[in-house]
Length: 221
Image (cartoon, rainbow, N blue to C red; front, side, top):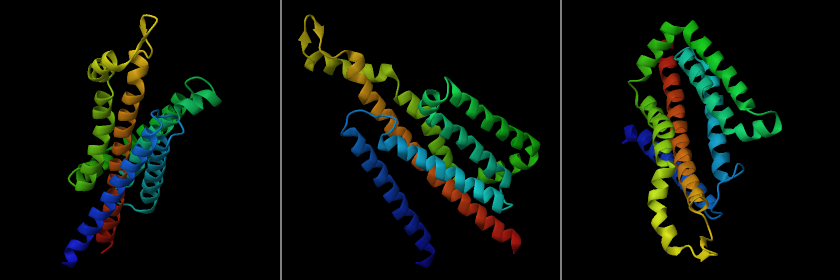
């Protein structure tokens, strides 16, 4: 029974994480519009920030998977900058987020290629673990599924019949255009999926850090 305690603890923590994601999405959906300062956006940025700090700390502290952890921190730093694109462009200059993102991309690529053999070896070893699989699922969900799920065509096909049936006509035109009708639903759905993806990625990062500690202790012994 004691051997199952870590599994039970993980189940409870993961379940609470999913509950938090659902509650955050529910909170923002009440306003029917996802803004830059919405709870969903803040939760996405927070999960990214903590993930970056964890990876940077464990990459600096432990020799096991050092290059991979620091490289992954750099990759997530690019995502973090991207989440602040509106703020950076508004307060600095147009496309300023791309400049900051490019810096992290170059630093990450430099680290990876400078230690290429070690990076590949660490990646190959980690790719066999469920911690990496969890992170990869979230990463694919973020960059593939959320983009497809947020496609305008999908939401137009889904909501256009409702728009035609229930939106009143004033002066020969719909009181709300199809674009304005679809946008908050499409954005809310896509941002909600992105938050779920970031939560899964965060769980993956935590598991990678725990695995790093486990392997580091094994090497010491």
